Image (cartoon, rainbow, N blue to C red):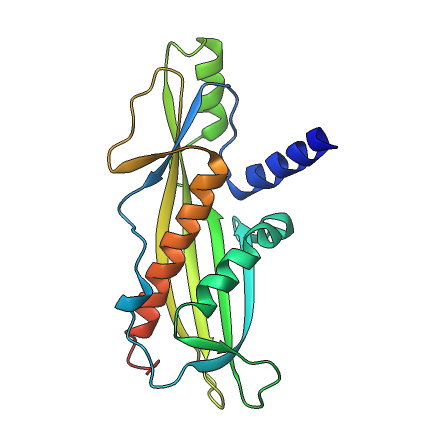
Length: 201
């Protein structure tokens, strides 16, 4: 049962990252250009806004249900602890909050080819593959037709074989840890930008 649970967990984590790891010698790094923003840095409204929340993880713009389920509780907790929103719980006239985290390919990169070359050379030739992520938060205030939208970007780097650590990146103990940190970072950055939007407060 433990083996089955571990395999299931690995498949979910693999679904979160587009990188195909074709070699066992891989190290994961979280890009440091986007950092976690503390909730204390948000521009808080006088009263937390009641909202109904929806979250979706996408891969190249297509819904990824396994990854959505894997990260949903984390993102929901982060929203609730932001001080910006309150769970609607049937409150009439509540706003709508939508969070979409999209795993997007980076132009000019072929993850499969990079892994294939590394495998053929038994790691003597290293390679680095980067997964891009775009977080879009959309808040529709009650009675309004146009939502307030903000976006933030992040990345996870994976090195294979004899490849040096990428610049501006922090090594992660696992792919799951990298994905969870990336999510915290990029969601917090988007929330900060949303709180500073003139149409939000």
